[in-house]
Image (cartoon, rainbow, N blue to C red):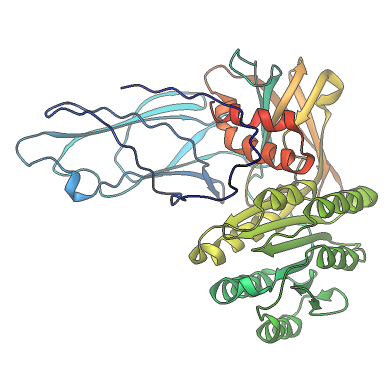
Length: 464
């Protein structure tokens, strides 16, 4: 059995703009026709997923649980379980094994590349997921650049690059925060969604420290603010904010996003000794989304390096994720979403911690002077967070020098330079690794610009 995939362009304005069926994101089904009794079926599944990063540790969690009813008859078929694992960290530093769910035997180690093998005869197929974690020794900020030439199958004839910077051991000081939470309280947020958002904001407030500032704005067709100005973080102010949320987080009415965003940016214009940040949470979409993107872009350009970071969070399937991702990209912030109600609170907190713990701001890369063309997939290079590595990709033409320098500013406003060694990669498909990220960003750009050329590029990324 074999199959192939073909891209067909469709320009049919009569197509229904509805989803006939939505699979759960963790459930995929494949029917294999014309199978004769006694035949062997070999299935090879390829996919990509992000590594989890927590406190310097990378973790991969792969589904490896099999229900009991798929086990062959006992004493008739021998069940052999085999896992081959190859780790290519991409860092020219020592890789340290931190933990594994299954016993692994190290087969080879060469620099930043390791290979492991698990093989055993078992009574039943695995009933636990395969989890593997490792760390890369990095005492301070460090990183590198991977470059790879284009291939004949690429949608873009320019070469590919990726830039990654590790936050290090956590000794760097985090920027003081001036935070405005902008929360959708329209009618569709009623019940668990708004309750989960309130709980998450309350926890986020408790994680702010003395020297930080905050405010809360709720919006539907109207706008309500906890305070007329930024409040200093202290026990009394946080307690008052929690009381205010209990009284004012009431779901009713429609949605107007432009007004609260403008209000939040105006509030943050007074934040001179802290990094201004907006955290927008919504489950809806509005008619003026293109205008909002352009207004935000103009506002941030006029403020330069002192512009607020805007991070966005989508709740459910019905908000415009392209719009929210684009606002976050323009605002040097982070985008995330929760498709199911049960994950809202934990996802918001993860998103908030990643976006708010900035250790290096206003990153610039000196590569442009050496290259004919240099384009980053995102609108701007995000800040470096203590909670996760910075990882961006893009396309270029020309020849990279042996080393490139990234510069930025620390919390005390001193400049820092990070030397990035350029590595020419042949055994790691960069386009495949970054395909999901590129698809999301390119689709958002195509939505905003209505650029047909960009729209045509997106389907080809699915074939990588």
